[in-house]
Length: 457
Ligand SMILES: [Zn+2]
Image 1: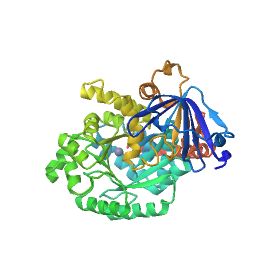
Image 2 (image 1 turned 90 degrees about the vertical axis):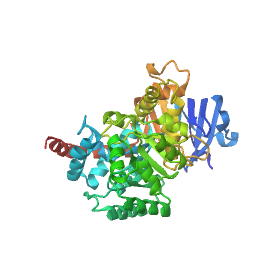
Image 3 (image 1 turned 60 degrees about the vertical axis):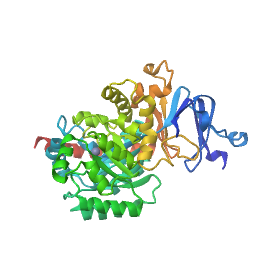
Image 4 (image 1 turned 180 degrees about the vertical axis):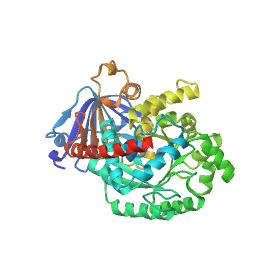
């Protein structure tokens, strides 16, 4: 490889989860090639787990221009493992309601009037901009018109996994479950060559999808090697209704239908009992914790300490901006750590390293992307962020992992790279992405007027 094809960045700290812990390197430089793959990580000293260290040969090193960030932390980009990006256009349009009222009385009627390919493209572009500026490099997105959402993510330079929706009832997007599935397969076929994209099937929830449809989803997922991403036991009502209708809890039903597997992603998992947790552990499923959304809709607090203890992989997500109302993974990471402590009545529960891991490698694992992203290691993609340590509130700093979780905010993110490409430079979007955002903001105005009218209806 020519030296001119290699890029490098240096910072006072580099922090990454590893398979067995967290590596904290001082005075570290990371190198990546044209393919976006990390080729070397150098550091003069390490606080813990120095095993990821590899030194570039002196010959290769000679002509590489290194971007020196000084007092900053380099770490993997955050993985938002559950989102509905286009719902950004309904941010703040249905506040202070419980889940079922929020969904049935406000969101579904608004979506019935508004959602089309333009809505999805504009909303997803706004969401991608917000996420990239805030240090999120990958998003698992579940929404209608996934092909349009996917194109918006790619045009912003962001990595995304499209959990293509399947639901029983008709929407503007599709008429019935068969049609949703057909559109999902079409979208995947049209886009499967895109390096930044991956795909999952997204049956909405056990309470909106029939046994027969779940079985078809399972068959397609097995045939195509796709994860299955669904909302799971977000509310207590949902569990009660499942017991009344199916005579079993949703997680048990998912197991009976063959939905649970290492490729299963359950969003929320708030109302999981010991039996559900054991079932998820037995099947090596994944749970995406969405603390802000669960608090705002008063759904509850997911038992992530118990899940982690049982061996279930926990990831973190924002959910959509219509129920959060931010797409801010720093906030979710901090809330995850804090809520776990009060829930377990134990200040040592879900420590900073666990929250940082869930927001990075845990997310990558849930999306079956951990061979490619989720940690800074040689051979993985350079999906990473630089967090400034300049703010007065970031000092003094004894442990950068603690500060990433308990102190830093998305406003401290100065650079974001996806597959080695700079998407955010000095807190601003790269030129192409900035232009896309400017265009989307113009179109946002039109949708805002329509949402505003519908809110009053
Ligand atoms: Zn959701």
